[in-house]
Amino acid sequence: MGSTIVLVSSPGKQPLFSFGVISDVQYADIPDGHSFIVVPRYYRYSIRVLQRAVKKWNNHQNLNFVINFGDIVDGKCPPDQSLDVVKKVNNEFQKFNGPVFHLIGNHCLYNLPRDKLLPLLKIPGLNGHAYYDFFTWSRAQNSRTGWL
Image (tube, rainbow, N blue to C red; front, side, top):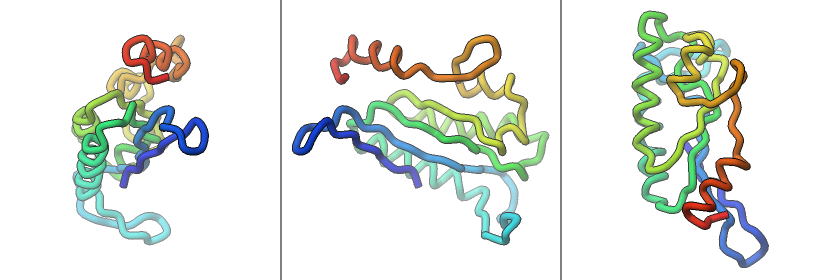
């Protein structure tokens, strides 16, 4: 399930900021299966795990953002469902009461090309290169909220 990271400026001080982390949702609307090393996979259930993580993050009420480390869709997702599946999972992420930063995993790229994923997940970039600039983002947040 997703976790929460808290960075502290020094012992006994308040956190500088807190954020949620999740990786490998790997949702697909297919029957349960297993990985290539025979680990059970619960493809449809994975979206419920994400929903619980989002609920936990929202209940925390002090998270500045969430980072998704990729693979929101499983590589076994049928190609004709890939776009809808990514949209469905992204809609669950959007229920978080704050910014979500997505990274693209290999399973994402098995399903959709990068040029479709970047705008769908709102990943910024320049000249086809995707990246986040947290320095600029944190300065903008500081001017609005005073948290950094």
